[in-house]
Image 1 (cartoon, rainbow, N blue to C red):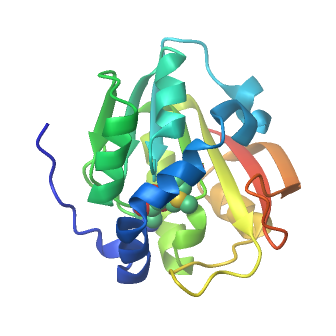
Image 2 (tube, rainbow, N blue to C red):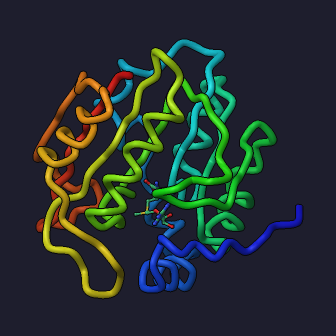
Length: 206
Ligand SMILES: C[S@@+](CC[C@H](N)C(=O)[O-])C[C@H]1O[C@@H](n2cnc3c(N)ncnc32)[C@H](O)[C@@H]1O
């Protein structure tokens, strides 16, 4: 299928280049985890099927494919063309629609979604982008929809644009749009074994 290059301004040249150059290697890493292992905390919050889901910053498509297998109509948003190509190859599920778009504006994405997942993506946005993104994500959620975020904590690497974002800031930003925190798990170890990295899982309801 034809694919288009999306010049994701907000991905930042550093992150975009890193993900583009490392797409094949990252596929091995990301796909070594299962959706159920990576997102155990979110499983009780998944809506009954049929439902609409958006996986934002979908990477190599692990989570998009798992959500599609659960019967959801999935839109997988990924700004980096090389990752979209790898993802389509690994997960040729016709029920996943791939979209070249990026936070914070997500100007091409059309909601509403019962479920929006951002797995290991939020840390790529700076403070101003996070404030804009949360407003846009709220707008894209269906009335009873859930927004699920996994946040990376620990010293940011130097080879890509990344920030260490606190749970508290994220909860406050979300509350400002009316999103209610319905689940929080903090301090989970890194499933890829990096001792300096911790994760939290935040779930919000509209
Ligand atoms: C650490 S990877 C996580 C991939 C996947 N969600 C997972 O959990 O395996 C971060 C992803 O966020 C994407 N990304 C970075 N900046 C983004 C932005 N501004 N908007 C949307 N996605 C972005 C990257 O291209 C990459 O696919």
